[in-house]
Length: 473
Length: 65
Image 1: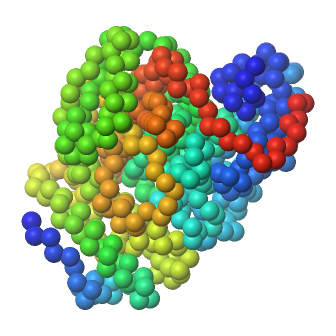
Image 2: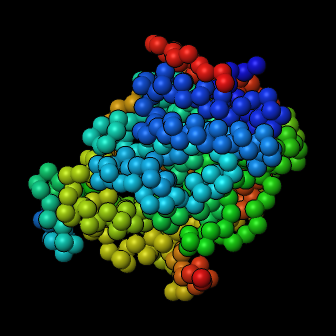
Image 3: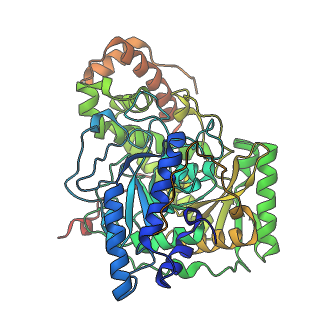
């Protein structure tokens, strides 16, 4: 059998439902692995080990007598440290929130707990899910399990590193310009930015209200679907929440993409930000997999990538300063230098300029939806393979274009999956974006691709200097 | 479009109006960061119909009890 810590959610939940795996045994396996390996990765900032064991025991007792409540019953998970957790420190990696103990749970934590999940702890992020990687904030930055000298990207860095390393099977991150998909790509896992408004952001510490999305990361797209089934749904306490029915995301894993129409924005990939030859080869190979499965591929044309970035970043710098202006005026030294640089100019942007950016967002969103109406999904790489973990020039946020931001501007669902490995062992990534509220098709395409390729068979080879005895229950 | 970075004096004036009194080190960051933000804003297309409302207009249903 697969090592317990490398079981997917789908596999573990089947074993738990069949009484062949104890949630206590599974939880102990993860806690042992975290203890053995996370000093290399820094993917957790807070562990809730005793609480996890207690929740696992309760889950086990209930499952024995009544059966599982959901696919997540008895499954360990972790949360990016911007999801508020009642009684558990929630810091956003910032000295400003070093002693912040929320009084109530985020909506997502409430849903995961109600489903019977087992909270292992909180994951490292970039400061306030925006500035990083940083060495002058509350905790050190997380590292990439495929090569700990490399970055796991950001801002859901610890979440993605923990999943790839087998320290947890499930986590939630957040994505304002690519912060779920970038780390998922860097760490070779699956991560979904859902349609805007599908997953509640209540009591998730905001980055930028108008572009923030909460969403899941896991080893496989099938597991991402299980997490979406658990956390998606209307929340009247989130003003951006959509009051729409929750479709069957788990059932989306049909393994069939015959007839799927795939659009590729070649002008972004060939003219605006030309891909490296290796990434281009990986992307071409991924498209060939879909062609072989019966999909069709055609070019699509969208406004320049730079316009999406300019609009999002202009809006974001103002919304960020609005959130942090009081602290920036009274105690700016408590911000990490990276975040401070990325926020501070928001004070000087005129209201007219902010609103013009919001108006142009409408234009870009319409253009995106018009193109999406002509295809079922759009595909492009999420990012180039991860570089070394080192301080980024602070201005890079304003100057470095991204393949992920257009789908935050449009509010479209977008998934990153692993599409192979570079010569240095770092993962390649494939981004699959879909029509608004058609997250299920995006998941179906990602799941089918994973089943048609062998990339899910490879795991990082982290070696513990000392490996605690695993409890087998 | 001419790429003219704001001068420290111009940024200092804007910062005063925004209520920002920063130590020298942070002020230099502001000057640098605002130059990048200014260039982004200057690239935004401005010509659109008068009735072209921004994204995220008010939806009263979101605030019903």
